[in-house]
Amino acid sequence: MKRFLKIVFPIVFACFICFLGYLIITKINRKKEAAENIKTIPKFSYKDVNGGFFTNQDIKINIPTLFIYFNTECEYCNEETKMIKENEEKFQNVQLIFVSFEKPGLIKTFATKHQLTSYPNIHFLYDNKVTFATIFDVNSLPCLVLYDKNQKLIEKIKGQTKIEILLKKLTSQ
Image (cartoon, rainbow, N blue to C red; front, side):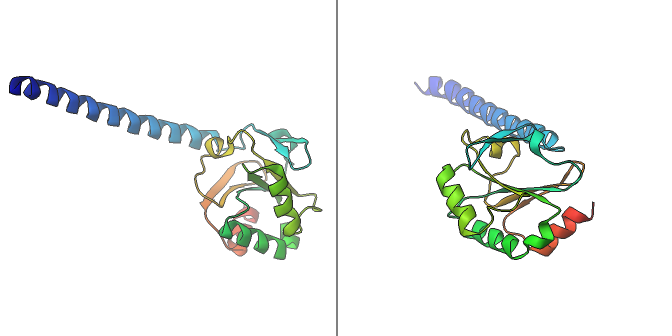
């Protein structure tokens, strides 16, 4: 029995190490692929809160775009949105796209609460298939993905960010 364990244990341990290595390499490759895919605005299609669809084809050209991945119950998301509302006039030449995986009713209530439903440059989208996080490689809330007027990635920002910093990054390109 001891001889059997002396042979089997190292084999099992080596297999375990190889499996962990495989998982790590797979994750690194997925991250690299996602980083490559978001260098320009990738293809997507999400429902808007009014029941229509909004795709990458609907993004206006020649103005910067800011994707905001949020949750209606997230305190930081609410604060970020409140700051955007307070500075909305500074965002008139920026397309703001709020995306959440929550139900459209919750998203619409959130947009109404923050008084952002009547602006033509602001869109609230429902990610019903929960693909935004994978496509744009985001894993925190809020997460901001900034694109310049040529739809090239400026930066991906995790967490709440001051409006002045966002505007500087979006308009300096």
